[in-house]
Image (cartoon, rainbow, N blue to C red; front, side):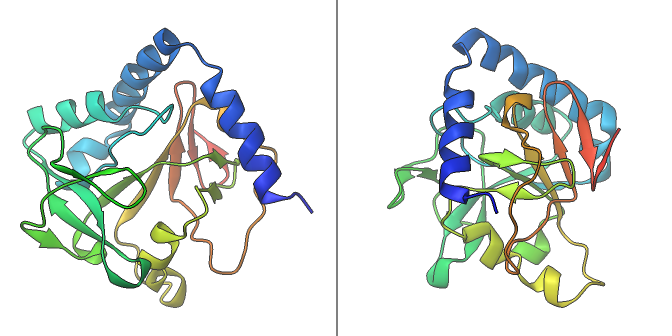
Length: 195
């Protein structure tokens, strides 16, 4: 069995080794790939993450979504390790949470089920759309209802990553929530099938 901590370290190192110019170009390529895939036309309430460190930058994608008139939201940590989503005006959020991640002001808050598309950060992924996160479990606990009720498909969970973050297999626990798709600068993965 692959150790998650070791895998996280390897994949973070691979991501951090990418030059800033490569990461910037990849963020623009991912935004274009998402537009071509139709996600920005299909969904109107879209939650993004504020990029931290070497994570794939969501700001080009957010600007594109805003130009199409989409409602934008950012996650905020609430009680019991759950996320809530607050409307986002496109500017730098006003405060950092306990992990040093920028969060929006609690205003026009939506529950996870009210969002249509959630763009998630990740440390690693595999072709089956299994996600390796930071290890805090915030997204897993916030979307746990999807595992309990198979009929609930909302929101659509889309992971963003650099291709160097793809692993052969991501170890999975029963509480880990699978993504519906992952998009890198090179490929579009949907539940095991690159598109």
